[in-house]
Figure 1 (cartoon, rainbow, N blue to C red):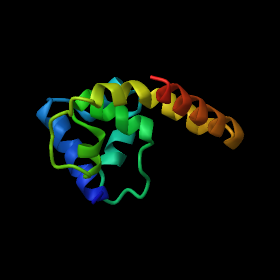
Figure 2 (figure 1 turned 180 degrees about the vertical axis):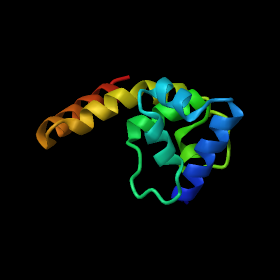
Figure 3 (figure 1 turned 90 degrees about the horizontal axis):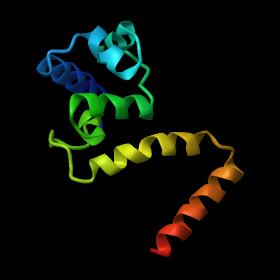
Length: 115
């Protein structure tokens, strides 16, 4: 089960394991040092976006499921590269209005069926 304190602890542990400062991790994913500090804080009420979590997972070398506490396996799964490739697309699709989002999803489903 996902637990925010688990995510905070894992990000901090992995960052330290990679010898990254908060500033270094922030620069690697395009956010500020104070944002990383906030994310690592168990008292923080805000959660990073899906895209930010994906970038963190990539830099830290783990799956997003591991970061979020949905998995206890630190190793990247074989399909995780594919999932990372789709993250920017998913983010863009999520930003579309509902009609366009439904259309894109139907197009993708149709394309996958034809394979």
